[in-house]
Amino acid sequence: MRSRRWSPAFAAWPHSRVRLFLFDIDGTLVSVRGAGRTAFARALEETYGTAGTIERYDFRGRTDLRIVHDLMTEAGLDVERIRDRVDDCFRAYARELTRIIGDGSRVKVLPGVAEVVRRLGARPDAVVGLLTGNIEAGARIKLEPTGLWPLFRVAAYGGDDADRRRLPAIARQRARAIGHEFSFDRITIIGDTPLDVECARASGAVAVAVATGQHPVDELATCRPDLLFSDLADVDLVVARLADGTS
View: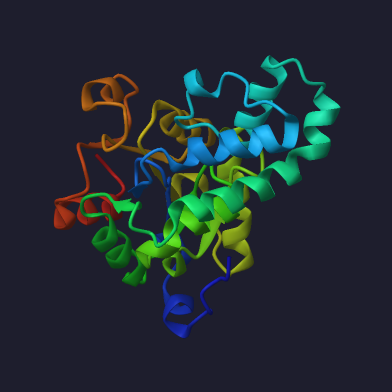
């Protein structure tokens, strides 16, 4: 991913007032209507000879590295074999996902998302990025048809670490590389699953849950996120509450 060029406007804004907003992809920004699972099944079959129990595996909130490890160890494959072929698997996955996504009409941008991302990205006190279980290639394939891909300045991906809870530190390091130093309490993680909330809690970030995936509002409420939205459709309200950083 290319970083946005550093500009005097961003340099002049006090670092202590700038926040980093990290968005999940599937169920938070977009729905690709099962394309990821289908592409994964084909990639696993091609690479390892089996997709294991993929039809009943819960993808929600899990990193792509975790998905491969869980499914293939359950299928009885040796850990070394899984590790040795994982790059081949991800290349096959990206190829299949590209084919399934096609012209992008399968990708549905969820309510309010495009405007929320654009408004935050235009603010001098905000840096917008991704924290996703997708590998980088998968994230790009899913987001390029939406036109939102260039707006995300930093990212941590599901190919960086199998444990989602370690991704905020990776995103923080990448933000530092473009000139921004964030304490974890100046980082906001937005996602649609309890694992997104857990990820934020583990690092001391602000946890924002949005019920546009497969977890309803009442279920997400039990995780006690700092902010909870049914969706992001009320753009003015969402941007104001995210920028404020409080509930």
